[in-house]
Amino acid sequence: MARSRSTPASFLGSMAVPSNPMMIDVTDATFETDVLQRSMDTPVVVDLWAPWCGPCKTLGPIIEKVVDETEGRVVLAKINVDENPGASQAFRVQSIPAVYAIDKGQVVDGFMGAQGEDAIREFVATLLPSPDDLAIAELMAAGDEASLLQALEASPGNVDVITMLAALYVETSRFDEALAMLEKIPETELTRPLAAQARLGIEAAASEHAETEARLDALLPLVKADDEARQEFVDLLEVLGSDHPNTGLWRRKLSTQLY
Image (cartoon, rainbow, N blue to C red):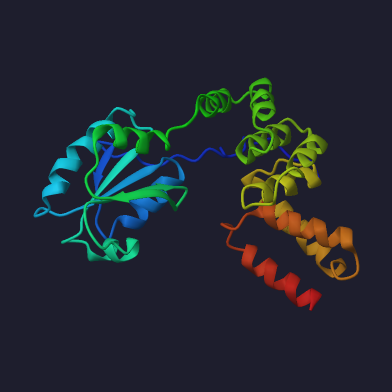
């Protein structure tokens, strides 16, 4: 099938940044977004405190100062436990101040009680990216093939780098190279459509959905007995995309035909 070109979506997602990205007041209602989701991109230090807690008043300004010095590479989330009991229960807090480090949605460190500035600096420093991490991030930001290959050499198993390279290869019709790159990592929601496009040898455009559905209709009677037809059908569903109103219908038709 002849296909026109379209620019692939970026695989480096971004999150909305608050007016003060280094310190936020978090509630039980915003905990999922402001702590867990945010920690997928930026490590979060959670400071559980209360207005009546004397040590909290001593510790709070120290943590704020140290996190502020990271210039956004670490975020401070302050939670008033009196007003947000759900957070205390989530962390099973027995006394305050209690401080936890969250990275990629997981607690990676923590302590209870007041600490001096040196101890806080050591605690926060463990969350900061290494010089190697920063160098890789800079190469990924450049986004060209030479930079990405250099980043991959420095971090051979880096899923984000591999995915970006595969997307670049699909965009430039180097489909075999894209598939070879994707074989290095487990399949994810981001890599499935890339692999599908590479196997089909296309870069699908939204205006071509009618053509894609016509091909799905032609393949449907063949999918049960023909492995190649079945793989092409599944790949075309990935190209069609989960947002297309007919994708669910085609998936049901496939299941009916197979079973």
